[in-house]
Structure formats: structure tokens, C-alpha cells
Image 1 (cartoon, helix red, strand yellow):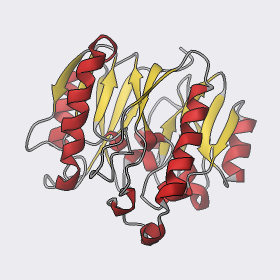
Image 2: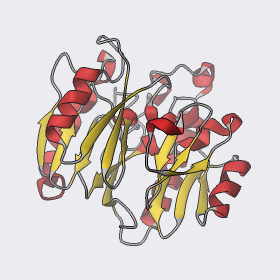
Image 3: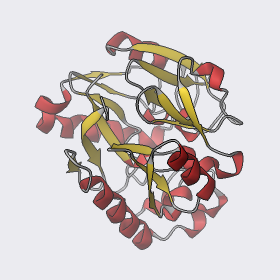
Length: 267
């Protein structure tokens, strides 16, 4: 299986994206107009991918983080798991997506919901061809994913779910699945030992942002522009990096993998 998905959802940034939840001090300099252009470029790259259907959902005005389409749910051909944000300001994204998925039941299957006290964000979920790794924080009141949310994911998903204690903003801030049991990984931030049975393409610590990548099929991997050592490591491993400028989404604590929601064929 060259790519784990044939359908992917995106959502353009809304007009107040600059009010997103972010730990990046540069958030105050977000240029929403530029962000919208960068998102169009990102979506164009997706549309160029052979055999990939891109579904563009409408922007959600008043929900500034909603551009990060991967976070509200983990979508599968047979089952979709609607997450639950610890960050209360984002919970409207779950409800909006649940309503929209009613138009795509044939693609995403039955929707299951993570319930209180569980919290689950897509950014903590690494889907591979035979296993799901779920990053969590031990605090049940976590602003992101907690173990109760991971346990509910395991109940609904067809693949085995392996919990991983995460110390990054999201698990996917340090890794991305490529293909054929190979993962793009920042080993200085996430130990390879928590991902047993895989090969790795390394990301240097100083290029950590490039860990958030998206395998597009046909050896193409979308990564943020400006990370030459990661691009070289990918080329050396037989991949073709496709670079995109995501400066305004970096300011919002988001990256390549955050901006789209694949419908996984394995889930």
C-alpha cells in the first residue's frame, strides 16, 4: 500500500485565524491574507497528487483554529472517531465536522465520539499501516489528549492502538508516517524505541518543524520550505520532497500534517 488514504479533507483559514490558540510568540504577527494564500498553495499540491480526492470544507468563522483540520477527528473508510478537545474554545470544531460528515457517510463510515472525561486531538495520533500510536499526557485534565481518550480510540479503531507518553505539543510535532514501515522522525525529541519495528528518516533537532510532513504517494513527501537537511535526508532515502511555505501556520503552532484530514483506508 503506497499511501494510506485516497481522500483528504481541508478547511481554509477563517477571517480571525490570527486569534488561534498558540504558544508561538510570533502569533501576534500572523498575516491572515498571507495564510489564506499559503493554504491555497498547500491545497494545490494535494490536488496534484495522483488518485487523491480533495474535499474542501467551508471556513468556520469564529473558530480560528479550525484550519487545522486533522485535530477534530480521525477519519477512516469504515469508522471515524470524533475527538474531544481539552481546549474548550475549540470544541465547536468537533460539532461542525460531525454535522458535515453526514454528507460523506459513504466515505467516512459511522461516526463514534470520544466522551468526557476523555480528550483526543488528531495531532497526537500517528496512523501507520498496521498500528496506531497515540500520544497522551498523564494529567486527565490535559488541554490535549489524555489516556481516557486514547482508551476510547482503542475501543473504536480496527487497528491496534499503542499509547505513547508525549512531551511535545503534539506527537506529530516529532514524527510522520511515510510508507513501508518507515517514519520521518526527530530522534532528539522522540525516542525511536517508542516506535518499534520501523525504519527512520531523521530530522535534525534544529529542523524540528519539518517533522510534520505528509506522504503524498509516488515517493512525494510534502514538507515545509526552508529545511535543507531534512530534504536531503528524504532524498537520500528515495523520496522526493515537495516544499511549501507555511510561515503563518508555524506561528499558529501548526504544520503540514495539521492542515488536512486523510480518510484512512486502514482505520
